[in-house]
Length: 141
Image (cartoon, rainbow, N blue to C red; front, side, top):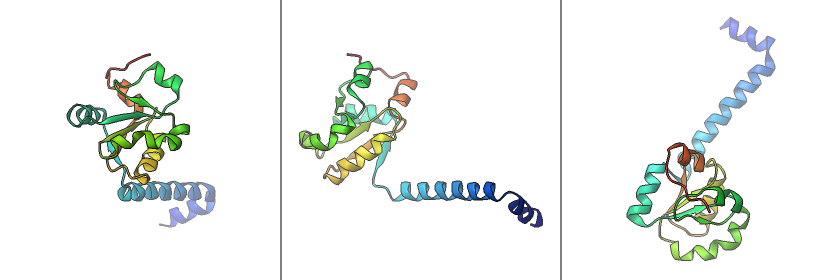
């Protein structure tokens, strides 16, 4: 125990950084536990599309979308989403899977959709990066 106290005294900046990282990890786990967002894997996305006619909403830029997207995906760039939520009203009770490049931006978009009353919103874990890494098909146009 004496060595820990001595280390903390000699390296206060490192100790503060470690405590900050530990707190950040704890907070992120707590947020994930209480979050209403669901996360799906590429395999689960495929099953939702095939069995429940889920809508895949790609929020990447138009250029990224044209470079490769999931078959049947609808593109509404994140910057335009708030103005176009009304165009998704038909899918209000259907599963909607939000896709971005890495899965991070999609979480904010999914929260927007949930707040707008969409009941079955999920995020593709890992985004298009995980989709292509899994060797699943993409459409280019």
